[in-house]
Amino acid sequence: MDKIREFFGQLDFSWRSLKDYGLIFVGGLVQALALRTFLVPTQLVSGGVSGLAQLFYYLWNLPIGLVTLIGNIPLFIIGWRFLGGPRFAIRTILSVLSYTILVDVLIQLTGSQPITDDMLLNSLFGGLIMGVGLGLVYLGRGTSGGTDILGRILNRRFGMSISLAYMVTDSFAVLLAGFFLGWEKALYGLIMIYVSGVAADMITQGTNVIREAMIITEETDKVVNGIMDELGRGTTIIGAKGGFTHQERPIVFCVVTASEVIRLKTIVHDADPDAFMVVGRANEALGEGFKPLGDHN
Image (cartoon, rainbow, N blue to C red; front, side, top):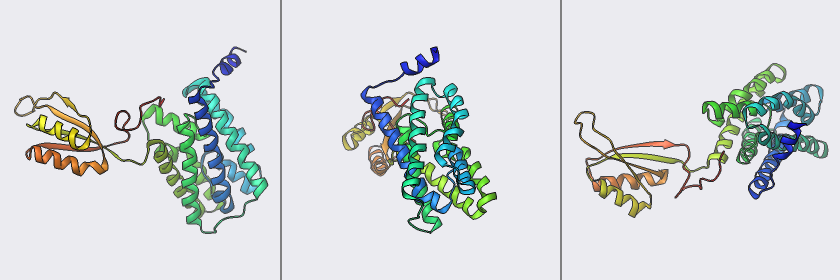
């Protein structure tokens, strides 16, 4: 009883939580549409518990949504332990229920006629739309259930990217489908999973590629002022010492978008042609000048 009280006590109807619930529901709907429109008509398997449910549907005509719901129960228990207890449960239940119910309803109401018989188009567009739905669920701080729970654990605990974690946890069902449906469909399924993971990353992290730059220069003030005046970007000066000369050499650190890198190089060159500069790729930038920091937990 205490666990039940704790669960319902975690229900939150704040604007942020309602927005999360909306994103999760829409994400489940988008995934259901992808499955109905592109996967089921061509017997492609999306991977994970849902993929196994699709395989059972193709072989024995068992309802995809119902089998997915049953298969989620043990993984749900694991997720409760590792992904946030009641708060995780509320969002996962909403995600799983919206997806599993909508899948079976869509198939019952509309059948399974394909838009196209081209397997490559079905795998590409099915993966793209499935990934968009998955990304929306992630933005709502939920999971889509199934082995996605294991993927989220890998992402949170070990820093594995969403696309890689998604591929690792979902490839099993696709490979298993190869034994029953043929290896050509399994290979198309792997393409679909990869595209889905990339699309999920784009939705959760954005399409802008962020660059971080570290600049070592004798003209620190000129570089800092040039970056501020011409790019409108803030900088941070980090104290450092040359490994060979042992002289104090401050490092100018800044974050820019990919489209601003060329202008940044010009600014640094004009200020100090002898400067040393390293430009690297960052996954995401949060805060002033980029996306609001907010609560991304």
